[in-house]
Image (cartoon, rainbow, N blue to C red; front, side, top):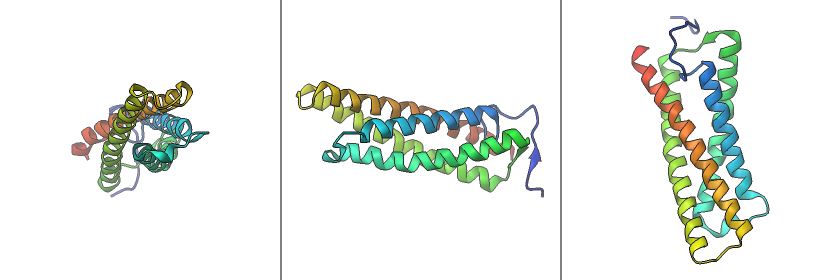
Length: 158
């Protein structure tokens, strides 16, 4: 069994090691990092558990995404795909778990932010930062879910 197989034209777009996967991972990294920045700069996010949860989840998602960006970039530019079933399975499970965590963190942040706006508890500037952070988290979740589904679809072919 070889460790690397040359890429072919019939690869599923968006699956691990393709340029579409690189774009998905890069977008996921950017949106996750943006969500983290909107939440953390000049904001006392630690007053609310939902915001702490979002920061914690983003602290997991950013390194995961950045690592897979590097691996995808290597695969795209060297034209070799690491198509070992174990590797793909680990990526699928990691994407699945982080996708669920991202969705729950984004939903909890959005709901707490909505509650804070309804009771007029935070300033417009502060609430808009919370809203932007939740929006970036939802975008990151959407890309993470896409990566999971593309790689899950690839699993039976291995």
